[in-house]
Every structure is written in structure tokens, then in C-alpha cells.
Image 1 (tube, helix red, strand yellow):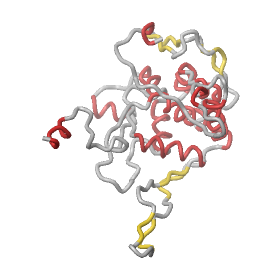
Image 2 (image 1 turned 180 degrees about the vertical axis):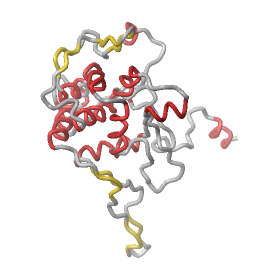
Image 3 (image 1 turned 45 degrees about the vertical axis):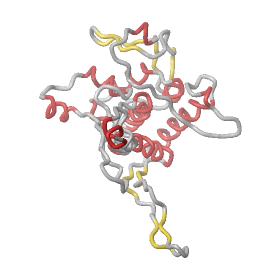
Image 4 (image 1 turned 90 degrees about the vertical axis):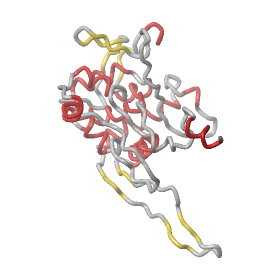
Length: 255
């Protein structure tokens, strides 16, 4: 009876949700768009976009989470305030969604981390080729804007995101995560020990790394940061807020 309750529980308590399930990352993905924009030369740390609360593309309005908009923001401020419009406009300057995918792959998304635990899923970073093969449809440029803020087809695991943020912190090096640091015998002798293993290395430009790190620091430590209320006195840390995609709600209900 207990086993039946576990395997039929809709919350799937037997699954390791950090590696066996993947989710739309939402705004925590925006640093990937920022990295892609800066590394591909579409923006730099002096680029300023004006956010009025939405961006009109054809017949569709892509809204920012802040109804009245954020005004003029640079990349650091866009991360701090999580301004959707800044990242929409950054995506428009890139050649295609493939530029975002390129840097997402470089920084560890869309592929397994290689942690020695079973049934890890790779997640999904969409490309133009992927959509053509999977859905037999051409990529719509408007879809790139959804990808730019971590929505649309994008799926990541929790461990991937943790590893990606670690690589941003160290400048672009991907390490294999380990679950066990070392194994010792009963009398304390070392049997085996996990050593740092570099999986990939794509060094970020100093200006890119600084802009991203400064933005993430101000998310928590600046009064305008989206996580300012979560700061802890006496602790110095950085972070990024993210919200799961909300479907079938009007913009007024979302606001």
C-alpha cells in the first residue's frame, strides 16, 4: 500500500527533481542572453535600451513584468531589475536564436552535467534546426524573444542552472559536479577522492563577466534589485530571481 501511494503520487516523490525533471527556467536564464549579446558584439556594457513596459513586434505586444516599464537601463541594471524589454531588444540584435543557444550550450545548458547519478535528463535549448526537425516548422523570430527570458521551448534542470551560475562566477569554466567528495575505509584510509574535472572552457570577456557579476550582486544588494528583500545581514552573496511561466492569464491579472 505504501509503495502504491509513492508510485501513484502526482508529485513524484521518488524522482530526483534536481536532475530527472526539467523546467522552464524563467528569468534566471536572462544572464545567458546577456552573455550572448555581449560576447557576440550585439551589445556592450554601455548599451542602453528604453523600457516602456512592452515591446510591440508585429501584431503582438511582448510585455515586461513591470507594467509601467523600467525606463532607460543598461545590461547591469537590466539584470538587477530583471527588465524583460532589455532582453527582448538584445535578442532582436542577435543574428538568430542560435546565438543564444550557442552560449547556453557553452555554459552547460541543454546537455547532461555528467554527475555520477542515474537518469539525468539533458534539458532543451531550442535552435532553428531543432524546430525544423522536431516540429517541421521554420523558426519564428518572435519566438526568440520568449527564449531570451527563459520561456518558450527552453527547459533546464536545477543542477544545470547551479553549474551554469558557478561557471559565470569563475569566468566560463564548466566542471563536472560530484555527489561524493571522497570515500574512506572504516579506519579512515582514503579509498577514492573526486578531483576537479574540467568539462568545457569558454573564457568570457572581462567586460562581460564584470557586467553580469555586478548585476547579480545588485539583484540582492541594491534597493532596486528584485531580491533586495531576501538579503541577509552579515552575508555577502549574489543571486537572480525567476518566475515560472504563467499561461492563460491576461496581462492585467499577471500584473
